[in-house]
Length: 323
Image (cartoon, rainbow, N blue to C red; front, side, top):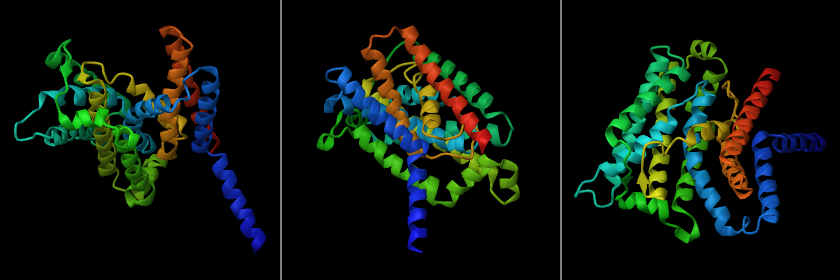
């Protein structure tokens, strides 16, 4: 019996060590160590803290994206939703809201509604997720250009300023926010019936429906969550930058997808975990920082980043085929 237990424990350890999330964490550690030797100051606490802070923005956007991808969809509107949040929030201010919490809640409600509209198009109108969310992104971008034009709007919200600049106990407030969201996401994803329904729907929508999974409401929920987390990321981006402008969310579309896939979530749905997306987000900002350190041209940066995403998608497709 003891040998059986040891064998079972050994298999579990091997499963963990060979999992994509653990591999991603190992790659992050290796890259940080190598970069610290290659570039003076890269491994300094302040710089690493800054990278994690940047990773928090990608991680927040990728939180909702992970739900959507596991459910068998994709959300191409997250960048536009980040921009909606960052631009609309400075335009909302009331004397009765000195902290700025009410304005933040209104904006998050708005971005959640945008996500729900995406879900309605996918679930009820049977529009392909890529087409629906791309159309939504295009609509939002046009609307933002009409509203804001080429002007930047300055953040005057005290709560937003605190989120973007405060460092309680030396830890950025945005990172603490990311930690709190991560705990909630992992709990919902792996310890609730809703999470189980998402995995079932992503693995086989027809079988999930025949098994009693409410596919329509689950689809609405995952896109609503994606809208909410993208909106939350927009709040953090606004606080970190001090102003919002059209296009401020653009870098986070491909980054959110890459972080999800890099963390081991199958782009075809049904398999994955946010536990892998977290180090995936940190790895992406680390790679971007390394490219900057070596003074690569913008063209080479795009090539390297695009190659990384393509490689991850191809690897994910091969892993799905093997299963």
